[in-house]
Length: 116
Length: 114
Image 1 (tube, chains in turn orange, blue):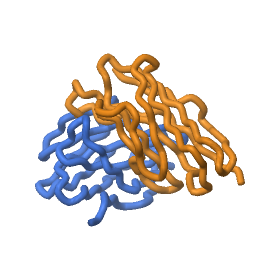
Image 2 (tube, rainbow over the protein chains, first blue to last red):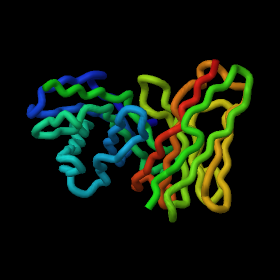
Image 3 (tube, rainbow over the protein chains, first blue to last red):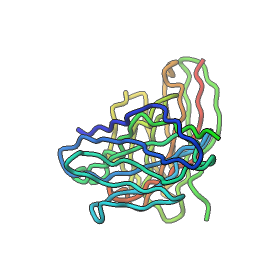
């Protein structure tokens, strides 16, 4: 069984500061990993995904994440926060051995607050 | 191109009633998945359908059922509604439903059970 832990239900940073959102996973096989963003009253939008190619993955809106197998982590970063980054962020895993039939397993989410 | 669409956007029901939620996938996508997102939590997987067949099911009671139509649209049905079924129900589509694929989410249907 897979699980995802997102440390920090709320993260607050100043505009222009580094954004770091943490995600650790538990999986019996190397998983596929995803970061989604959810704005208020909207669905989820993919930021980036790791599919066992490059360990450093670049996504949309200046976000990137690094897959670290030894730490079972896939933390999301952005060098300089913008007010428009304020949203809920979800880390999710997908089990390759299940062929996709098990869907995505999501973490509980991290609410990112940007202070002016 | 249109994204994933869901209807209705909001719904209010009372305990014991039945509800049907609808989803249209992105054109060309043959797989649809359903998720339940309770307030303050991450989405939880309910079903995956591919080519009108159920391929996967999460840990949800039999009150939850779904089906996929020949045009790849899908319905989620919930019987005997409970207060705890109040949530945002998200539909996601992908090409064929493989684990490596990106799932594209619709805006969701917000269900309130009174």
